[in-house]
Image (cartoon, rainbow, N blue to C red; front, side, top):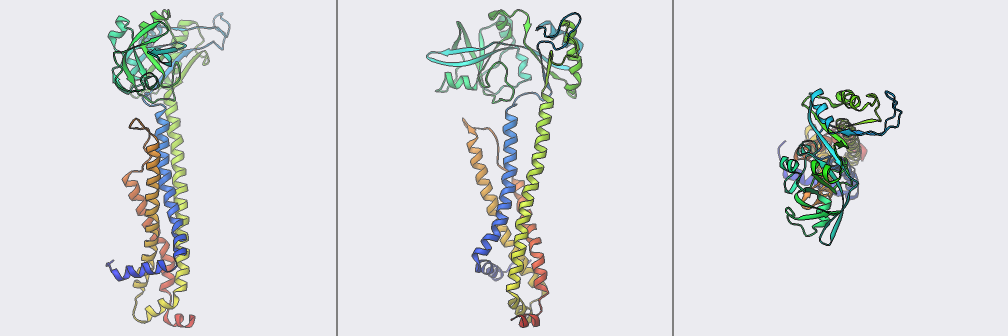
Amino acid sequence: MKFDLDNYHEILDTLTRNKSRSFLTGFGVFWGVFMLVALIGGGQGLKELLNANFDGFATNSAMVWAQPTSKAHKGFRKGRMWSMEYKDVERLRHRIPELDVISPMLFSNGGTAYYGERKSTVGINGVLPDYQRINAPKLLYGRYLNEIDIAQKRKVCVIQKKTYKELFPGGGDPCGKFIRVDSVYYQIVGVDYNSSEGISFGGESGTTMLLPITLMQQTYNRGNHVDMIAVTGRPGVVMSTLAPRLRETIGRAHLVDPTDEQGIMFFNTEVLFQMIDSLFRGVNFLIWLVGLGTLLAGAIGVSNIMMVTVRERTIEIGIRRAIGATPRMVLSQIISESIVLTMVAGMSGILFAVLILQMLELANTEDGIISAHFQVGFWTAISAALAIAVMGVLAGLAPAARAMSIKPVDAMRDE
């Protein structure tokens, strides 16, 4: 289409002739585009926030722990208390080769950590270095536990985000400093800033203090007992298929019925992540359904108002036809007016949605780290703009067809 400045001056003059009507008509498109873009960005941000609750956890991991039995087995009554032991790690390693990482864990009831006059309530976990392959840390300072810490039973620890902020409110690297829990001093070797909150063992999220498991066995007189065993499967292995074999291997060694799902608890994170993915597939479908429905309603409003405008301009269009305007010129004029109205309203909706999403993103920024990205991608915004343009063309087709059908004689008679 050839660019004609006078033509666009005429379009603006037509649209501003009745400002209230043009504003209210454009608001329907504005709101539809705003809803679509804001819901897309908001849905993406909410998914990131939810995933952050399980941040760092391997998607093919599982946890096994002991609880009172719910079934009688081999002369033992139900309700019997039992516990796993360190030998179970070797049993699982030899009998289930599909497992990749097998990491035992110990928990304590926690306590209060002191650094000078400051204190923080902590939960204490004893782990092996390979636990970081199951729940990956985000080390702000220092390092994770290593094999030498395990072998020498070093009194070292890795503290988490909330404990670090309570004990060291001024910030800075705390590695090398000592904190006291009860009567034992531990040297800090790392600060884990993992924000995972959905899965937490041994205390409130962000307050867990990790110790070498051998040190915890000695310090808390735990012997060879194990509170939990965390495992991951090798690539391609579905963890839920290994659950019966895990229960059978551990149950046989401790005289617990392998079918006792309450006695031998098995938590599969793979199922959890699949539930989250399924949830947000449904959410995304609803977002597009609501957004496009609202946008379509706005486009229908534009089409209706353009029909009214064409009816009001019957004489004007008839005179144009009488002095030589072709149907194509009339068609171009009406569709151009529709496109300009929808594009101005639609781009305003996109800009307003981006502004709101940017504010949400800033509200979810802590210590310079963005917790969730609410902004839509560049191509999403471009797709929304193209959708607006298409809506503008479609909205203008019926009014343009009505305008093309006007004949000069009918226009004079209408007067």
